[in-house]
Amino acid sequence: MRARAGTLASVLGIALVGCGVQPTGVVGAGEPATGLTRGIRLYFAPGSGLRGVPVLDREVKDLDSVVKLLAVGPPPAEQRDGFTNLVRLGGYAVTGRGARVTVRLEDPYAATGRDQGTGQLVCTLARAQSVLDPKAGTDDVEVTLHQPEGPSLGPYRCAEFLDG
Image 1 (cartoon, rainbow, N blue to C red):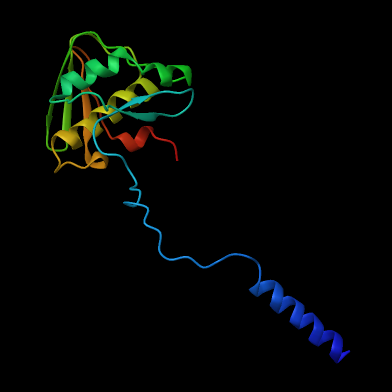
Image 2 (spheres, one colour):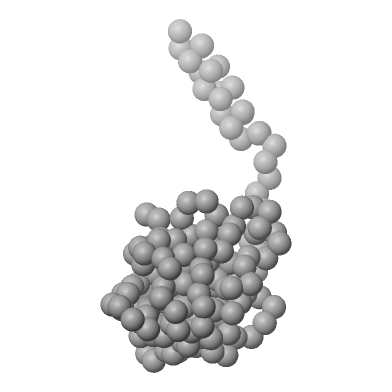
């Protein structure tokens, strides 16, 4: 019995030591990955929920131009993946100061204020304001929509429209 136990221990020891994997030194792999990308993101609706798409090919200097980019809709690759634009605005003017963004609408707002289209607008503007004014964190930015008649909608924060 002792002979078998000794043989078994020897076989296991050889198997563990001689598995063929050789030790290596430290392998450089560059900078570590970071959590969130930087820069402007446009939010689109791919069925359910909202997803941000980075704006990589242009510099954005004001909130009006961000809304214009959003109105163009998702890039072709995202369109093929089912991303759509649900934001429908007539005339508007957007201003941002600190963690507050105001959208002044020329026409009544067609959506309910608690829908994905509003979420697209709110999240896009919150992200853009946090990039244009680095003191304002995306999660802190509040977006209010002022209609020409009727009540204002908001203030809203992006987190109200995101999954999870």
